[in-house]
Image (cartoon, rainbow, N blue to C red; front, side, top):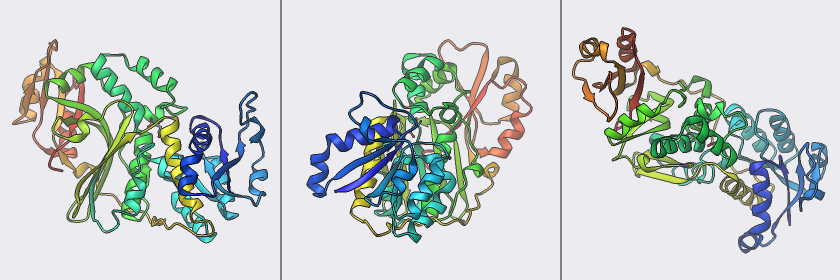
Length: 406
Ligand code: HSE
């Protein structure tokens, strides 16, 4: 029997324990030895829980128990998760995590530590919740040149966007429901301001590049400025507003990575991804388009991805599962040189000025929207667009358009 420890008995950690209990027969059918949760590390007590007797408060109990060969780090945050993960790996215990903050910040270091100690550091649950996307990138797609990744990578913001869109619900009201359902981060700013999606696209980009794409180098915008008025226009154009993590490799080798809300046309498969669902749309130069879709957040879907990693580690005790992601920093292309179309809203008083600045712009109308001028620009660089909008005193909002051809 493989003995494991779970660090953090929160939403995901309790899901891991529940899943291993409920699906023990499915696990044993594929791995007859079975997997058993020996310890749960948490600062809290859980009186009345069927797992109360497994709760410990001292990480050393786990580190010093030679029977424990796999640790699930479901605590979140950088510390003490970083120290605990490194200490476990240094003792040859594999670590499986859902902690995207830690993976984005310390992925290459922990991968190297695992390699040096003949164990593994796996993080399928860190991107896309229950969707297997890291494993395909590391195995089924290693022969491909990945030319673009477009991902709806944050369940909370996608849930907020779609309920605002479909039901006209208020931002704060929907955020509260997402928190109650266990989708949101402890500090929802990480979701709403795009940091969580940004870390996830940084992880995917690093895996594709084999080098470190630093999330601090990625331009990042969240959804907090998106209003129900924007959504009315989106609907009139048959588009949906989606927070996307985007990675685009140009033929000359320049790599653009960005996190921002985009208007997604109805012809694109990401348009229909709603609620807590995530999707990652990948283009490989040989395989063409692929889409991975599933629940991007929540207790059991995320736990499922953690336990998938546990199963891989259990089959490879004493061996390292290789992951190619080095410390070398990948330089990103200057984001201001990226070209696209933009949707813009200004006060009606600036209609003429806007038309002069943005020659060839197409006006957009939406029901009930009076007193303003909304339009879609022609394709131009981010720098050019920013320079022109600086002359507009009444800019209400601007949203990038997803180009179907890119
Ligand atoms: N807060 C994250 C989300 C959890 O909403 O997607 C899963 O990473």
